[in-house]
Length: 223
Image 1 (cartoon, rainbow, N blue to C red):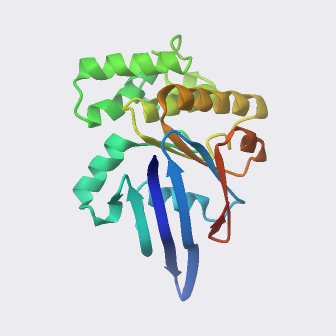
Image 2 (spheres, rainbow, N blue to C red; image 1 turned 45 degrees about the vertical axis):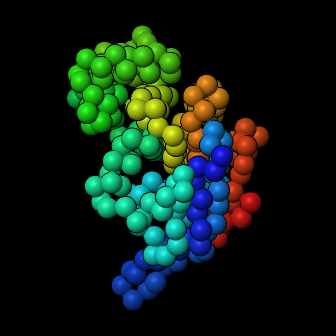
């Protein structure tokens, strides 16, 4: 089943008198349950593509079709609801709230969706256990390792049971051993939950795990 279809997507930026073509006529498809990559060097357009797919940015032209619906035909309120209920984001920098413990950090996503505090706490604890952090529930982010921080970010992204996870260089700040454990975790969750993962990376070691790999260079995407 096709989950996302991108058609002739362009993103242009005007910087002073210069025009930057960040995305140039991108076409791609993501199937439900896939573990897919978009690979390319820094500055190739990976992050821009993920931001548009996640409706954090709007395309200059082209369409992003999600389960048959053109996302950018929706109102801003409907897009915000879509992001909150259907998408999960994992970034290179985890963006955890340092004053909150791990349970509270993961609870935030559920609370924003309208869950009660009790349900949000139960859901956060369950998800943290699934990512191997049941022994760290009350720790704050600065009290745990970088890999554990990224596991917390993954738990936060998955706690709402999204249909699509967009991950932007999720192992970029981790050593090779920790990176491998994070990739293994994402694969495990992908297989168990059937959540679609689309990961932007320049790490060629991830290719062997992917159901589909796209390559991007200077804003142009190819298989």
